[in-house]
Length: 153
Image (cartoon, rainbow, N blue to C red; front, side, top):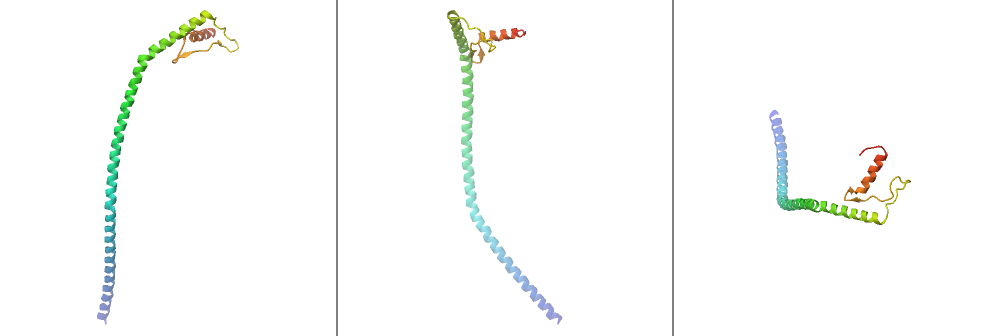
């Protein structure tokens, strides 16, 4: 009787192991098929990604060349601006100041300078600024106001 029980137990165990092995074989076949499908789809995707990276590198090289050209143009424009400002800036200021002086001299000959308006606290004449510099007559008025307040030059 014990022999029959052991034989039945071994038969059940072998049947169970056979079912497990069949299921494992099916799982391995499905996994193999899945890996093959992924490989088939991944290879073209990797080729496309590689082509895209190469194209992006080409575009970056072009942008780098453009950026270096822009930097060179910017430095040239800065040098040109500095040269023009140093060449023409001083003489233009002098010419403008001379023209202003001539106008003032001719204006004083033909008409007397207007009297300051006490209600406004300053002269009624307009202040003139040439290229960021105050003309001499405005400086004189400022100096007179400071002296009136008790300050020194």
